[in-house]
Amino acid sequence: MITLHLIGIGTGNPDHLTYAAVKAMNAADLILLPRKGEEKSDLADLRRTICAQLLTQPVRIVEFDMPKRSDQGCYIDAVIDWHDAIAALWQEQIERHLPDGGTMALLVWGDPSLYDSSLRIAQRMTGASVQVIPGITSMQALTAAHGICLNDLAEPVLITTGRQLRERGWPGAANTLVVMLDGDCAFQTLTDEGIDIWWGAYLGMAQQALAQGPVLTVGRQIIERRAALRRDHGWIMDIYLLRKRR
Image (cartoon, helix red, strand yellow):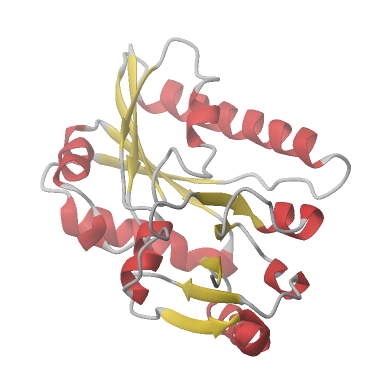
């Protein structure tokens, strides 16, 4: 019997892990750490640091190379194929390192329930018992860093992606949007002068970067700063909140 722990690790700061997350890490027989190529080696280093600081038990740590998602053809089909390939790698590591069963843990950025595919991939693992340990989301880290409320008083919030904002425009259901997974700065498609942005990258880390203001005023600065940070570090994780002024 395999038990799979999907452990939310926040934005990579060891201080963001809950006590439950630390207990789950130390209770594992195997922790899998993905590698995403040399230019994203910092991501693997962050997971290694978390293990080095928080493991108090002798837990086997195994690294593996993540497959790359195809950027050709239908996006949804490419993602499904990519998830299949990752699940096959997880299964391979289980068969190699836990042939008699046990507990395997994966350290998931943010929280496994929010714009992360670990739960969907885990559903492909036949016979595995999946347990989720929640983590601090980048959305929470963003509002904390800026010292703002997520929602206006008694108003809804919509969480979406850059692709959705770019292709469909501002949805009519909310005055506040949280935009994730936006590599192309979709906020630059907005033309309304009454929209403010709160942006953050590397939230909770030493290299944390923040910006805020009217989107038409600070948008270009964010685009240029984001590009520079990505050049400097080889990768970037960012998120932003948009709000229409009343």
